Length: 180
Image 1 (spheres, rainbow, N blue to C red):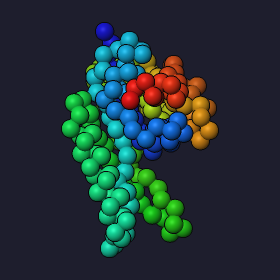
Image 2 (cartoon, helix red, strand yellow):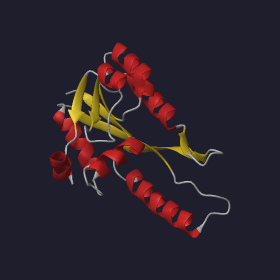
Image 3 (cartoon, rainbow, N blue to C red):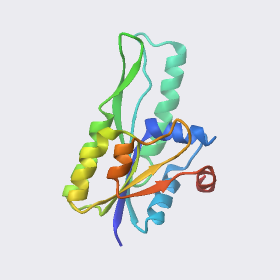
């Protein structure tokens, strides 16, 4: 049976879950479900995110938010077959927050697993067209790449990314309720 890795861009996945009214999801159950859906053995899940921003010195609210996020990340790190990759959240001079390093970490992991022959299928839970070049490279190595996304408003997938992936797994409210 083919092996599959799941790559979760949590910035996107949080939007998907919120749009479906889902506040809690068992990430290991989700990973098993998507792999079963494509008839593959679950190899590993890679989870990408950033810890919340903290000013210097942090406010009480920032400390509490950071503590909750830290507990969540700790719980994921203790799941079998899970790898957490954290980037940094920076605050731009105009007050806008921007993730740094998340996409490149996902790109490196997908490329390494593809070139190393560790997987035959990849499931991307993300929407960013920045992933198109690495998906092309994975496909060149014989990897079948699935886009896992939602059609709900605010959860769209970039058209170029959608066209580049080999197949799709659409997330619906009923599916997410079933996975809980």
